[in-house]
Every structure is written in C-alpha cells, then in structure tokens.
Image (spheres, rainbow over the protein chains, first blue to last red):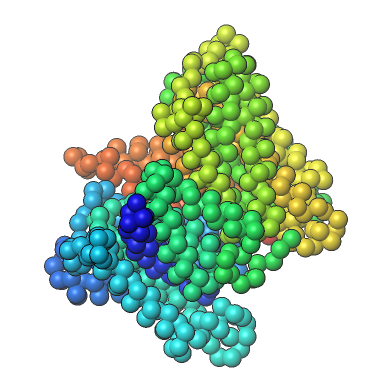
Length: 291
Length: 349
C-alpha cells in the first residue's frame, strides 16, 4: 500500500514535469509582455507536429528534426507576437485574452487541416526500458523525459537569472518605462520572450507526445497548466516549478484513487481555494490591485 | 432596439445631431413582422435555425453585460447556461411546472450560482478572474457529469415534446422569439438605470467609480449575476428546444463561442450581441454550404469542415479585434456613415 502510494507519487511528480515547462513558457510571456497566453497548449501541439514533420515526414533524422522544430516553433511564436499581439498593446485584458484564444483555434484548425485528426506517433528518442528503484517501477520514457525536462528547465532558469538578455527580461517585467529609459530594447525583449516560450512549449509538447503520440487535441493538456500558473501566482518562475510538480502529483493521485473524471476538476478546486485565501497565488508578487 | 442604446455615455446622446430614427424603426418592424409570419411558410430547418439564433442571442446579450459593459472577463458562461438548462429540465420532469415558471427558475438558479462564482471577482481582477471563471466552468461541468442521480450523468436528461398554447413547435417558436425580444429590451433598459450606468463606470475605472459613490463590489456581483441569469433563461429554452440536456452541451468550447459572439458582434452593444450571435451561429452553416458547392469532387468534406471551421472561427476573432474593435456593429455604423469619435471610444473597452 505504502509502496503503491510512493510509486504513484513518483510517477505523478515525473509527469508534472511537462506542466513545468509549459508553465515556464506561460510565465515568461506574462512577465515580459503582460499577455495571458491561452494558446500555450496549441503552441505545444504545433511544435510537436513540426517535429513530426521535419523528423518523420521530411526525413531529417531526429537531431536535425528536433533543432528544426524548436527553431520553427520559436519563429512561429515571434510571428504571433509581432503580427497579432504587438498591434494590440495597451488594449484591455479581455481583448488580449480573446486574441490568444482565437490564435489557439487557428493553430488547432491548421494542424487538423495539415496532419488530420488521427494520432501520429513520433520517433522513439527516449529509451523505453523501465527504471527500477527497489520495488518501484517507473516507465522509462517518463523518467528520461523528466531528466530532460530538468535539464531544460535548469538551463532556462540559469539563462533567465544570469544572462544579459534574461536580466533585460526581468527589468522589463519590473518596470517597462524605466527599463526602456535605461536603454533596453523593449520590442526585442518581447520578441525574445515569445521565442523562448516557443522553444519551451515545443520541448514540452514533444516530451508529452513521446508517450502517446500527437493529435490536434494535445493542447488540452495545457488547461491544467493554467491551474499550475494560477497556483504559483503567474509571476514566479521558481514557484511554477513547485506548483507544476505538485499539480502533476495531485492529478496522478486523484486519477489513481478517485477516478479519471476528477482529474481535470481537482486542480482547479485547489486553485480556487488558494485564490480565495491568497488571490496572488502561493508565490506571486502583489502586483494586482485590489478593490 | 433604436439607435441610442449603443450610445452608452450620456454625452454621446446629447452630442449626436438630431437624426430620424424612423427608417431604423421601420426596418425593425419589418423584421418583427417577418418573424411573426415565418412559421406559416418557413421550413423546419429555417425555424430550427431561427430558434437557435434567438436562444444564442439571449445568452450573448447576457455575456455582453458581464464582459462588454462591466469589463469582467468570464470564460465560464456556458456553465451558467447549463445551470438554467438543468434547473428547468428538472422542474419540468419532476414537478411538471409550465414553461414560464421553468424559465424563471432557470434564470434565478443561474443568477444565484453566478453570484457565488462572482465572489472571486471581488478580490481579483482581469485575467485572474478569467481563471476563476474557468474553475467555475470545470466545477459545474463536473457536477453535471458526476451527480448522476439528479443530472443523469453523461447521458443527461431527455425531455418530452412541449406544447405551448396548443400550437406545438410553433407555439414554442413564439415563446423563444418573445423571450429574446424581452431580453434585448430589458438589457437595453438596464443601461438607462443607475445600476446599468454603474456597470460602465466600474469598467472604465473602478477606483473612480468607488470615489463617485458606487458600491463596486455590489456592482460587480450584480453584473455577474445578471449575465448568468440571461444565460440561465437561454439554457432553459435550449433544454426544451433540443429536448435533451447533457454535460457536453456546456463545455469550454461553448463558452469561447459566446465570447467570440460578443467580440465579433461588438462589445458593449446590444445590437452587437444580436449581430454577433446571428453571425456566429450561421457561420458553420454557411461554411458547410460553401464547401459543399465549391470543394472539388471526391474531397473528404467531413475531414475539411471541422479544421476550416476552427481556422475561420479564430481568424474572425483575431481579425475583428485588430481591424474593427467595435465589431460588426462598427461595420454597420460605418456603412451608414455614422463614425462618431465618442462611440469609437466607448467601443474600445
């Protein structure tokens, strides 16, 4: 019994890794540009399809295919920022949210049009062999996926923390006007943060799809990412990691002991309760004004 | 639905040059006359679509009060539709109450649930609020799906055929039309009252509204409740109309559909809600019609239709927001050569 709980917990935390990457992409966009990106899940899905196209359909092989997919996803994100969201800067939040919802619909439509509604399997990159920790069995893809996610998230956070560009992003998120007057190119920061978001979403999408393949509905996963982000508090990079792993764990435990229909609901219930007590989320800054 | 209802600010009304509302009034009357005589010659399909459009208009007007006029982003609107639908269906099945009572109960039930889920709106704003309403969406969907003994679970509830005034479906058609008319007029008149104007004041700047003596908390709650109540009435009609209520009618996709209708039609405009609901309801039908006639022989239409609908759906939202923020109502006003700066500003929110 205890062993079983431990096993589910490990699997849950490992699967929460996917949320971490997607949530990081979400937070970086929100911090830099104040846009709440409802298209995060669809960017995951589209990046995964790009990998499928370059790798399987065009025969690049998986290394070149992966690079092409990440670059392609970053370019797509930059086009979205420059083409659709830049003209709307300063408009009410309702408008920005609706644009990202519209974008998500468009991306889903194009994926369905190009690749069809059926499940497509990706090339097996991650080793399949399960990993044994004593008596506990962890599926190999999940474990290795988690390791890769850890590397990517670590690299991203180091870049965000220490590089010049990361500092510029943080400065912009603190105070746009001051950042601009100190010579930071705000437009470049916007583009960069979207490009980073594109890379992160594509990576998390590919890792998600390496288990069950990819369909145009893959983006649904990201609805739980919203719960992660809200729980962490929208602006906290470190908090997102903890919240992502927690939501992954919670979801697996709920799925295992209460049934699958509770899975999409419980994370939101937790979020709602947390928000009633602490509206900024667990780790968020007190940026929002209250009435 | 005369012209001044979109002129949300008082200054627009006084600043506008005197113009004749007679042509507009006449066109509304002609439309009403057409709708009255429609059942005697319209096909079943036409009646079906008109009913569906009218129900969507009621729900869209409600969402526009919350989102367009008060500026509270709600992405859980379809859940309130569901509350109304289940409430009225249960009343009818178990108590056998008449339709009008069911509609009222549906509206009141949604109003109350809307108030409950509006509570987060008191502490949080903007996109945070959007997530709270998303939680409402999942919460209510979960209840619809899991409370099997009451809601029938995934299979939902089946309703018998309704007979209004002994006219059968035609009678129901008139009920829907009348309700839609009342809903639109009621919504228009709300914005001539203190409560309605305080919605707009809260949207523009809630601090300023509070300084002016408006109870912001109460205003936000009422805006949520009224929007939900419209959805509840629409939901109770929808239940009777489709004769089935199940959880999959009230998903996030449906909520986004209503948001799209608000945005495409025109925020903070009753006429916009009407146009938006008509346009978004007809859009899939038009697309199917065009595809059936324009697609090359042998193309797999079913495979094309759904992705193309999603692309068009998203493109309409994005396109209108970027190029015509006032929505269809802006296009209409431009077509009539009516480009008041004040209205353009009023439509910006």
